[in-house]
Amino acid sequence: VTLLMTLIAAAPAQQRKRVAVMNFDYATVQSNVAALFGSNQDIGKGIADILVDKLVNDGVYSVIERKQLDKILAEQNFSNSDRADPASAAKIARILGVDAIILGSITQFGRDDKSTALGGAGSRLGSYGLGGIKASKSTAVCTITARMIDTSTAEILASVQGHGEESRSGAGILGGGGNWAGGGGGGLDMRSSNFGATILGAAVNKATSD
Image (cartoon, rainbow, N blue to C red; front, top):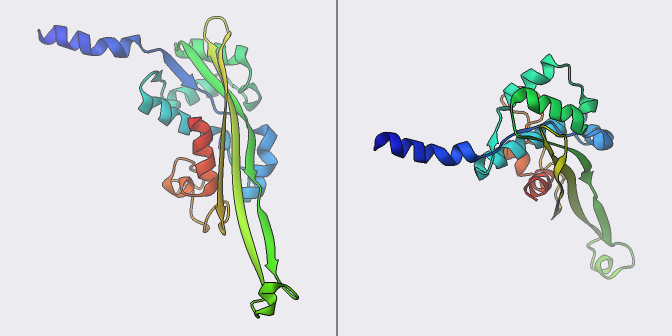
């Protein structure tokens, strides 16, 4: 009976398709990234990490450990320029022994900040001695595209787009200058709660969930 129960419990896990998630290509928005963070940060890896977490928590797919994927990529000398190529991705997927591989690109990543001056000399507010008042509103946007590639045929099984947008008044896009590096590593940790609390982090999470 114990053996039977074990087999029954294991059956759903065996039926789940095994997938791997490539780092997303972000060449289109690389200049925006450098302007936002003061240096180039691999947001393609960051968004892939967020997607892996969401897929694991969802439980529909069995997701390959990222370290295992990175090892294969290093061994095969798989360059960043190959991230969005279905044929190259299918080759890596076959080596990993997965059913499909997910890859994509980041097409929008940044902000649309607007500030409006209210009051000032001669205005109603100015006549009360309040002077000019500047109302600011920050809007962060993130758009990503993702494709699921069949391992054996390199056929695109699904192609989707996710968009996230978050606006807050009187707040910078990255909050109050918090630390988004993880564990002292110095790099941007897009899965950290500090980054997630910013309006840019909120936009990224919305786009990935979408």
